[in-house]
Length: 301
Length: 313
Image (cartoon, rainbow over all chains, first blue to last red; front, side, top):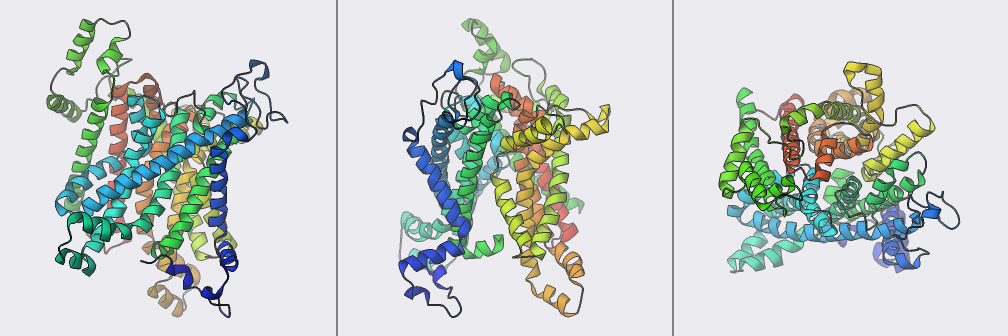
């Protein structure tokens, strides 16, 4: 699988061969062909910038209460209005992106690494396979949100526990994916050749099997990130996620829910940012899938 | 057929076993002493010790697990730490709104998603197709609780068409029952519709590209008969699988939806239990949901043969 070769195969009828295009022309063609992927990537970049530069974007202290200014509608001073404690909603929403993106990124990274390790071992070592896959089936039989809620309820609400609570139900999905790939690769001549040459187990796993799993793994990681962001918000909304002293989109909406009649703006903005973030991650994921895994892309399209 | 059903049920037993072990361990590995939680803040060490003995928590862990499994097999899900009522009774009291919501969402999702998917696939590449795909990606990205509040704001607060929150049992009248379920069903169903529509479209498109469909067109059949009589049945299996797998989405979503719309169902029971750290209820509800999920997927497996005679028992 050589991912780079995929776009090269397209030559527009009567057009200039891909190799003779200038860098700028290549970029333009990519944008024209993948408008949703590019839009998703730009939106995601915007969210990341928002999270990184939160203190310099005209925000005030997101936890500072000004009781005299409570429940103000959006205006020039408070772009998204103020909440029931007189805190600036814009600042809270901007700072809220930090928790969401941090949780999404960390869960995506940890889940992929653990899932990759378990999946490689499970796919390659027949004896381990049965035990591991039965355990994974067990975790997958539990609805992910419920498992996460139970875990946070029992261990206490903190960002660390939320991350663990999200990694547990997501890992089996990665394990299944990696194991499936390894199962088909295991029988192929290049693996047999490696074994015949006396390669040790770590070398077979890391040198020969791992690179072949990377493309689908990256795609899967983006979907894990999208659900992590969504479920973190759900957990925080239910009071089993990010503790209330750290603003997150989920707990901002949980606090604002009683004001749906009088201050709907408090619910509107965090939800809009949350939906945009998840959408942008999904769009980037779809784009990567089309780019890296044309076979799967054709099936999903 | 019967033998196959038995074999499939037997095959789900190990998974359920693993689930029971997880649910048991989840509570045991968690920090915090359940006995201390029950006893309250001012209990003496002796009182805590007594409660611990009463719960069997002083016994070795494998004995505890044995006791847990034995009582589960008798249909005993334990006792709530706070109300001291049997968890089974609490679950039975709360099960009706959840079943009503899950059923209406399932029906809504299937009735909307499958026609949408068929429409998109039959006009692949058209504007309708693109609109369906945009909706499929978008619907999957919108958080249920936000969508729920948007719906409440538009249809209840602004237009005053539907009740804001709450649940009315069908025994108290069918019209109010339906009215209270419309918005929760829309909010909960959106992601499911998006997922199902996308899979229906993809599955049907793949079938439409196969040889026998070309033959059907070549012998002069009307496009409608090719689509509905020849293609649809063969596209059904992945859609069925997704209905089963997507049911997990629905179970997780039920908890959030019931919280948004103040429906007194199992989801609310769970959230209240979370806030009170009532692990007995959390364990019970988690097990029940896992069990239902396994049953739904069993039903899906059995339904395969209706659509694909090649899958034999």
